[in-house]
Length: 109
Length: 109
DNA sequence: CTGTCATATGACGTTTGTGTCATATAAAGG
DNA sequence: CCTTTATATGACACAAACGTCATATGACAG
Image 1 (spheres, each protein chain N blue to C red):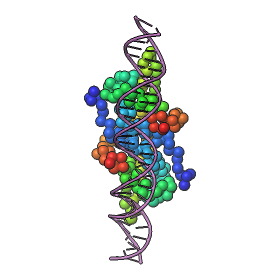
Image 2: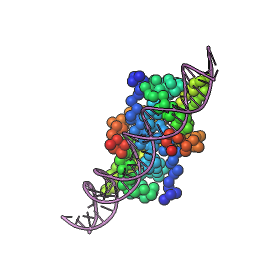
Image 3: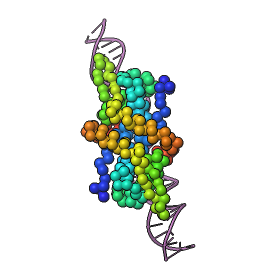
Image 4: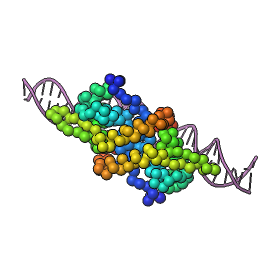
C-alpha cells in the first residue's frame, strides 16, 4: 500500500512550475534569447511586470532559473542543464501527439 | 509582441498532465512495475478505481500511456520513450533542488 | 439474457492556482 | 534626501482542476 507510493510532491511541484503558460513562456524565452531582466521579459511577452515577477520568484525557488544582481537590475537566466533537455523532450513528444494535446478531457472541459 | 510568443498550449497541457500527483504516481508505477490494468493500479496505489480511470483517460489522450484490450480487461503501459527520460531528468533536478521544491510560494500557500 | 467482473462517465462541491491591482522595497544619481 | 527606475510583495476575486459519489457501459461465462 503506502510502501508502493513514492514521495511525489517534489516531482509534482517541478512539473507544475513548468506547466503554467506564463512560466513556460518565460523559460522558453530565456532559453532562446538568453538572460534578461524582469522588465525586458515582461515587455517581450506582453505581460505585466508584476506577473512576470511573481512567476520568476516561483521559477527560481524551483531552481529553473538563476538570478544575478547587476546594479539596480536583476538578470535572470535559465537553468540550461534541466530546461534544455526538458524542452527538447517535450517538443519531440508534442510532434507526435499535438492533436491529442489540445483535448485532454481531464484538463480542458 | 505576439510574434515573440510561442504557442505554448500543448506544452502546458503535457506538463500539467504529468504534474498531478495521482497521475504522476500512475506513470511512475507503470514505469517501474510494468503494464497493469485499472484495478491493479488503483489497488497498488490505494486510490479509488474511478479516480485512476479518470486520470488514465487523460494520460492516454496525452500519449503518456498506451492501452490494449485483453478480454474484459484493459492493460495500460507507459510511453517509455517520453516518460523514462523525463523521470530521470526530474530525479536529477530534484536531487539538487529538493529543499526548494517543497516551498515554492507561488504554488504552495 | 442474466449475473458478475472490469472499466468508464457525469455531475458537483471543494480546493487550488492565477492574474491583477495597489503598494512596498531597493538601488543609484543628482 | 528626494526622485527616478527597477523589482517585489500582499491581498483578493475569479477560474480551473481535483476527488468523489452515483451510475452507466462493456465483456464474457454459464
